[in-house]
Amino acid sequence: MSALTAATLVWALASADHPTWREQIERGEAFIGSRYAEVWTQPDARDALTRELAENFAVAVTVRDEGGRVLTRAGEVCARPDLRASVEREGARVGEAAVCMRHGHVRGGGVLLLALLSAVSILWLASAVIAYRLARPFAQLVRVTRAIGEGRLGSRIQLNRRAPGEVGLLAETVNDMAARIEKQLADQRELLAAVSHELRTPLGHVRVLLELAREGALDEAGIDEIEREIVEMDRLVGELLARSRLDFETLDAHELDATDLARRTLERLALSPDLLRAEGSVRFVGDPTLLGRALANLVENAQRHGQGVKRLEVRAEDDEIVFAVCDGGEGFDESAFDPFVRGGKGRHPSLGLGLALARRIARAHEGDVTVTRGDDGACVEMRIRREPSED
Image (cartoon, helix red, strand yellow):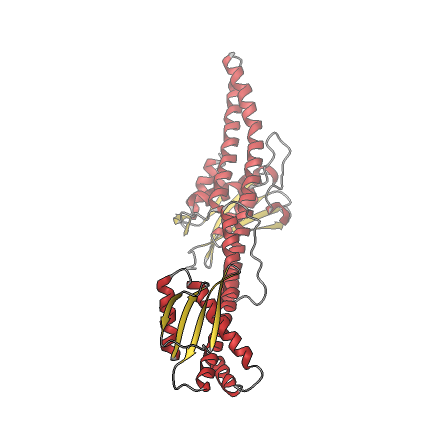
């Protein structure tokens, strides 16, 4: 900007006798008029502007209203002003600012004044353009973030390629945040709808059994059936809660014993402890509730769809803990890890969350769930890092 000001000043001085001299005068008058228009209704600011012009440019300035009444003056009175700047507000002329060179100044002083005024005008306009270009992306950021806050999660920030790097990075971050929240809420709505639908069946069955109990027609088998239905509902609610915790990334990590976790999973599912294959205590860090849910889902999947669990292996490999649930089935495709891919044909077919939830829990612990096939069946392995990374 300093180079631009200097260049404008040199050009104006060099072109004092050039045909564009009149244009320089008009430009200076326009700039002075616009400055007075900004402070016209503020007497103190108007007086300060008059003094500033008079002192900085060694000129005399007289400001009159449209009726010719002097509003403010700085410097000597002169009969023939060198500049007459019309002051307009809302399209109407409200007054005039007359500028006179002080006694002893040659025309070069006027050239200097006009050159400086021209330079200031250019700087003023350039700064306005720059400010607009800088503010426009932020205005869009404010508008879109406000829309996201109001629930319009499909709103996105659209910036051109010339947007400043920091602004572009901020826009990308806001867009990623909105997309993530939108997907999270969509998944939760889908999950709630699915769980609500699945709960109707066991609830309806329990209601019928309770009616039979009131009539005294419920035998021991009916009581067992109620217990199974309650266990099924507990499983569905447990999957819902685990999914919600993962959505909000709330891991409650503690030091755990992998062998003890596997043993308690078998006990909870009323399976024989003889299925466990482990060599002593294997320590690691993880969320006991979520990992217990993940391991239970893998064991239940083997029981339901893999011809029963043959063994549950626990072992340490380098910096990982491996839980391997082996069954007598043929295994399954990778698509089985997608949410809501259903399996089973009984009264309680799978909701399609078990394997997907187990994989999400494993990945939240910087691990994964994979399936391998062998001649005597398939094994689903859940690998968990023994110690979470610092990142």
